[in-house]
Image: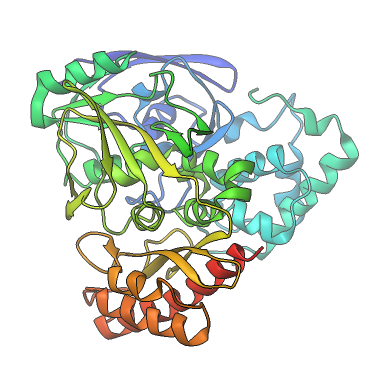
Length: 169
Length: 289
């Protein structure tokens, strides 16, 4: 039985800590906290991307990382997108463009899109599809997800302010 | 889904890490990107008793040209290779390879070093490194050694690396002028392993005669395969449709594919031929720029 370790991670700007076994996956560490169940476990194989979070500015699949690896670091989950009660342009986009049906892949799609737009604020359709290529959706056929990201890119272009959201809440 | 229990160690320096690997022997594994290891642990196919997390070791994240080589540090992530302007311009075969590995999230964690050290014939970089004639620098209790990529891979999940060695750098000889390379991969869907893939690197003289060729194959054998006969055939020959097609045929004959869910053996062999043809054509095109 492995010694448990204290893990401290800043999640959406708030310090979260727990004493866990090293084998605890980061996704389970996150989901253990009330209000942080938006990050989903969708597969066994590191394929689906429903567990995608932004760790120190980069997307990672939180099911393929141990919580202990993220000790002392900062991460953003889908719950961190909304600011002061206002939807992030990406969330608006998924709403306006019907970018979800069952919603299971959506948090992962949002986080991958968020990271994409941080790096490339004006992606082409091909670049959007490449940017979400680590996220699988069984419902939508991706068409409206692409439109949602395009909506967000446009909105963030106009808003300027929206586009400068901090990396974490 | 839940890995078996293990002890987690996080050294701050290379000597610390090597000491841990020595101390815990064969049951300890290096945790770098973890994008191959952790899925195997989740399936309980890998059950290391100790994980040595090397991600906090500094000095292993660089991409630079020095002394006639492109040198890539042991902790460089695939995403960094994909984003590097130097690699995009001067070593596009590497760009080709990095971007078809898995997906953006995995590429943020996965390392080039791990892609080689894991010894999975389905991994993409081994063939590219073979085509480029790369060297792998490993550090262990006995110090540093430089291992040529030819002969690095022994069989499935087995390389010449000792259990207490860590890959600290990959060195690629900077190709001479009029060189070009390409990596072409066919996959069932984005992010998949290769049904088959081919790395081709050529150097030509001003007349278009091939001075040197490197051709290697992904996922059509227990290790990446160097298509030596194809390489030798092209040496001293003018690169055109005929010679390229003939070389492609020789590369296909070097393949040892197995029939599986990605396709029957004959299909994969034919695929190797076509991919080699296209990879050589693209490599030649890039060499002629």
